[in-house]
Amino acid sequence: MLIVGLMSGTSADGIDAALCRIEGEPPHLRADLIHATSNPYQLAFQRRIVNSYDPELSRVDELCQLHFELGERFAQAAHGVIEAAGMSATEVDLIGSHGQTFWHAVSPAGRVLATLQLTEASVIAERTGITTVSNLRARDVAAGGEGAPLTSYVDWLLLRHPTHWRAIQNIGGIGNVTLLPPLNDTQSAPLAFDTGPGNALIDSAVSLLSRGEQSYDRDAELAQSGEVDSSWMEDLLDHAYYDRRPPKTTGRELFSAGMAAQLIADGQQRGLSPGSIVATITAVTSYSIADAYQRFAPAPIAEVILGGGGRHNPALVAHLRSVLHPTVVLTHEDIGMDSDAKEALVFAVLAHETWHNRPGSLPALTGVQHPVVLGQITPGANYGDIVRRTWGNDRRGFKTLG
Image 1 (tube, one colour):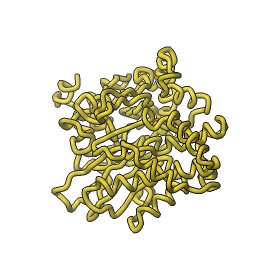
Image 2 (cartoon, rainbow, N blue to C red; image 1 turned 120 degrees about the vertical axis):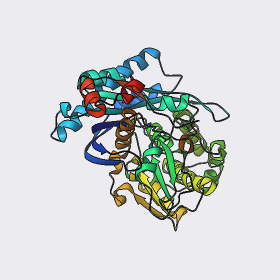
Image 3 (cartoon, rainbow, N blue to C red; image 1 turned 90 degrees about the vertical axis):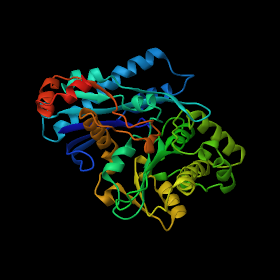
Image 4 (tube, one colour; image 1 turned 120 degrees about the horizontal axis):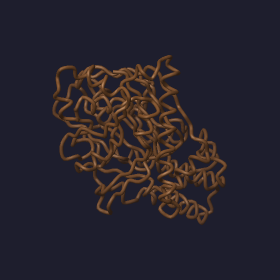
């Protein structure tokens, strides 16, 4: 099947789109990237999204409007990647849309109570004519899971090493990891969870310190102009989230712009420069990732595969390589995968599995009570055609999904 995956992370910096060819079924599933595009949001639109993360700034009328506006933008991103690949929408079978996460409600005890990803799938299906699978996290939460990280099931399918343990580490707004046993280990289970902040606190601090002129620390220029306050960093690593055992998940509800503002105030009280404040927050992100492996990895990790926007931050990556030594730190490109397109590809694969009535989440990965088929299907103009082509005379899938 030809499937477009669409992803916008908690950093809310834009939409990644990936046109993929997906064939087979687990454990012999194959996913090939045909073309990928990145579609950045304008700063004003990004601010509308980020402001809506804050309960004190969020409004129901704005959320309603963003829900449909995001649908339009996701549809445009789908058209864009299809056209860039030299194809037409009529050739594509499905769209898998992650949507935009606005809230992830976690109780003080760590149980996920609800999750909210907006982006109206009806708009995507209407504008493209392509049947759309969306709202995938909600089913995982409904079945007792953390709702994240959903990338972990695709990591399990595609990225296990033949002989040693790997950590597949995404550094988006929030950091998440999938700890994968090797293919020659038939006894060990994978483990996945959110490690804590990725870019969220760094981005918020930079935005506040620059009075909105910068949305992130480009090339770690600000962090590299300062020094890490080791004593303060140790205090910050004492946060209760890091002690919680997996499965666990978090978001900007915890590692928020408000937390970043408090960190800036604390750093200034310590007499630190803006560069040293950002350098320390950057180091906290790196050390929290390494600490998570030390605390929770079922076996020694031989390789770390980095993805997400955080891999472009040289200060963050340098800290991580230093604290993890001698563990090898690689990127997805080093193992033949496009880092920038990886998460969009994940949601193409998850859409494929949902269409074929197969699970996209497992108990070992998100804490879900049983393997679950994820998401909701919004028929596009091609719906009847793909039902006939993919299921043919076998009506079992149709009866289950219809």
